[in-house]
Image (cartoon, rainbow, N blue to C red; front, side):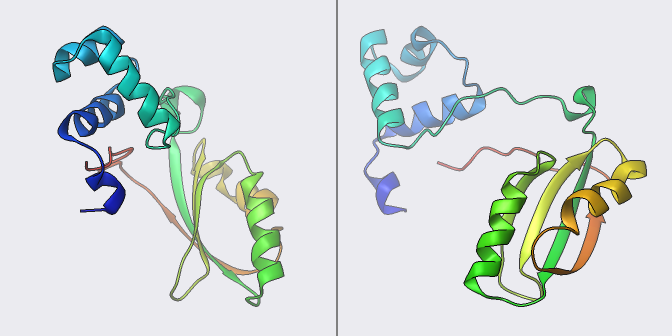
Length: 157
């Protein structure tokens, strides 16, 4: 078990699971589910936020309803690997609103980008406007998702 997770008792872990499932749960509901008073539950939740176990609470939107129904994964290989190239790429990709996630990886390419676009008919525009102009991009390989098997999964606690 992770060292920080070992510092949490069963009530803290249950609170984290409940908040991941639905961040709109009231303090009263949380208290009832873990067997604490509302004040006790509120204090614990505040501590979990303060100590960084909970980073944010936000709504998960329906991507199709807001015109972002297609997920693409893009492998990006840079023309050379140097700290200043990584930094410039990271700064630029962070500003692209279509990009949901970007991970530096070890293997046959440098970054794995997850983006949401309206549909594949707009992919070429996205690639030419957002990805290819990024600093140091030498090569890309794209994979379009045809179905969400396990999107936005909760973390095991």
